[in-house]
Every structure is written in structure tokens, then in C-alpha cells.
Image (cartoon, rainbow, N blue to C red; front, side):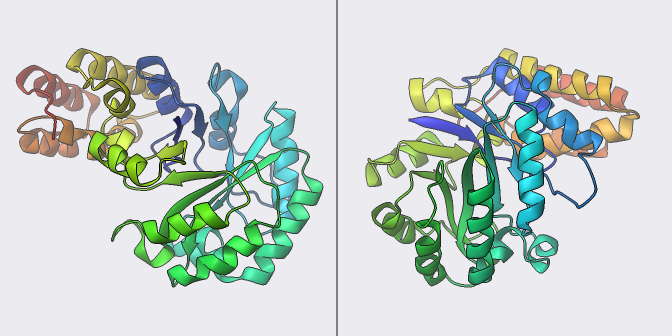
Length: 313
């Protein structure tokens, strides 16, 4: 099985990816949070830092692009190629209302003729591997059957399917019936993404779909960074390993960001997912959330690691 790290805006930055890669079983590919290209604008400092080769050393990193303008995609892909990248990923999955309202992300799925023309132009012009991360539709799962006809026209690196529609956001359950049809219908290699949170989730999925050999992990691995180790070896994370990971992320954010508030915003986003690893975590979660200074945050974290244990849920 190959494992990919899903992009999560604000969380899976290069700082997070680098610390994860150093502390846990490495991913086969790491996908960056999406970059939005703009005419007559180059990469901003945040985007540039995220894709700089020196920030992604020894990792297979795939930049993800969010746009519905083929010219913008082509221009950005050429810029990324100059940094040494040989693959770029198109985001057709983001369910955010502001993104969808602009006809981007999963909103682009509703404009099939425009999407087809867009794909034709980028596959003709871009001298790189192109992969696509998609949902199965905007309003209805039945939309997927016309979408797969469009996707099958193009020889892509792989098609990563999150089998929810845009309106689901991250609620309801992934539509595995449609994903099963995708296995039969797709002419491109498939990667599955969606709700693999535990070893039992993984085992149930692989039992149902034994031919699928690539999965993308997002919220599940952010909540439990040792998830792959659990899946492969049955081993659960230890506090020492988790503390090392936390400290790498935290101290690097302190080095590159100004002000306690900015650093703590990043760490609080991470703890929104990871706090559930600990026993009796509720009061510590409140202390972390209320922290306004790094001193208070560090005190809360020290108490959490000293007083509570990591539990298998």
C-alpha cells in the first residue's frame, strides 16, 4: 500500500510535513495545501516557502493548485517546474462555500463543459505529470458518471477520489458504492481518500477494495500521526515520540513567525485534532485554547504530557 498525506489548509504546512517526515513512518507523497494562481502575480512568501526544495528535502512533495482558469494553471505549473517539480495536482475537491461560489474546487464539477475544456488545455500545454483530487459531484452522486467520462479522456498520473459531494462537506459517510463503480469505470489509476481514522477503518476498506493500493490520509493521520505505524505494525504512538514531533513543529513556528498570537494560532489548529489522543483531555484542551502567550501554552502542554496518558480509542 502507498500512503499520501492529504493537504489541509493551515495545518499541513512545510513545517508540519517536515516534522512528520522526521518523526513517523514517511508518506510516499506529501501534497501541499492549495496554491491559488493570479494573473500578473508571482508566489507570495507563504506559498514560496511551502514549495521551496530546501523546505521539502528528501520528501516527494506535490504542489496542489486551485483554479478554474487554464492559463493561470499552465503559468503556475511552468513556474513550479523551474523549482524541480515534475507533478502538479489539480484541486477539484475543496467544498468551501467561498471557493465553490467562484466556480473553483468542487464548484468546478458543476460546469462540465468548462471543466472539459480546461482539462484539454492544461494536458496539452503542461509538460509535467498532472494528478487530480476530486469529489464525486456538487449536488448529487449521480454527477460522477458524467465526470468520469470527462476524466477518462485524459492520461493523468492518478485520480484521487474523495467520494462525497460538495454539499456533504465532511458530514455523512463516503459513498463507497460510487467509488466501487469508479474502480470499474476509470481508465486512470485511482487513489482513495476519506474517513480512514483507525486501523479497523483501513482493514474494512482494504477488505472491500483489495485492488486499491493507494490511499490518501488527512484528518485521521493529523489526529493520530502514528496511524500508518498502527496499520502496518500494530504499534501505537508513545508520548516521547509525540512530544518530539510537537516540539519540532512548535519551535520552528516560533523561529519563522512573529508574535505569540500567530504561533499559538497554528498550534491550536493542530491540537484541535491531536488532543483526543490523551486521556481526560478536556480541561487541558480548554487551557490550550485559552492560552494567549507562549509561556501559558507551554505550561498547559507540559501538564498534559506529564499528567495524562495516550490512549487507544
